[in-house]
Length: 337
Image 1 (spheres, rainbow, N blue to C red):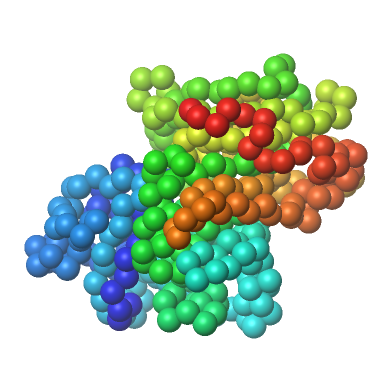
Image 2 (cartoon, one colour; image 1 turned 90 degrees about the vertical axis):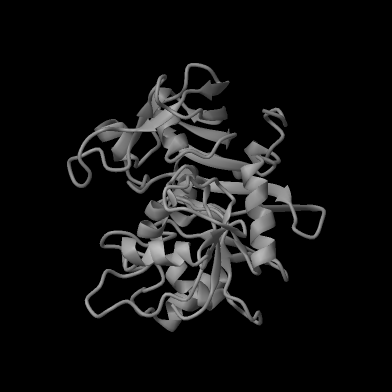
């Protein structure tokens, strides 16, 4: 990397130490190098000098100086992505729902990781130059979605716009509406889940806890989700509309499992019980970021709605669910938490 970047801290990265945040985003930067950059003031948080052990908050902006190219054989940075075809680039441009001088709203495809990680050489962050369009700056991620979650994703087209958008997430003035197809039907057709979540203890990787979360009343961070059943097919499955009021890792997936109705395709939280049988029902994760509403960086309200991905649209058709049954987003739940 040969230019200065200003990167917003995602909701899922809140409470990370600065050095661990760097390790995730720029694995080629060793501890000694980071300490030198901090000591000389080249790395800053919200424009101020910072320390390696400093805890970050969602929406804070980290200044990252030019880091040079990683040495041969070094771990790939989040931007070091394998080459992609023009067809893939065009598909990403076609996924743009809205664009102006400050914001790009993307309908992220299911299966596309937002950022890189271990054995992850293909991700949105490595393709963002495709979405530069006429702008001089590369767009920046404002928040994240899980790899297998589809739907509305915001990008800031300038550092100033990104900071304002991220501040809306931090202040919880951004509202997010999700749709899910779950296995079974919740006992209560509408409700509020207030169950704190914490990362599970245990070894990472296959067979271990990895990044899975669980309800933990003592160590967990508060997680609140409003939900309602839009339609149900007998007692077999239900279409849920959900609005998370907090942004914890895997919050909706864990809360749906807590209801006893895991999201279709979510074997991580539902095991074999998370798979409906029958033709016409994909085994992919059925979780979609349907809509978002938040203040626009230049004033007014930005609101965007993303159509269902192909696999969810097919499952909805299979069960006879009509999208119009949901009505307008954000009308089913109270406006203040």
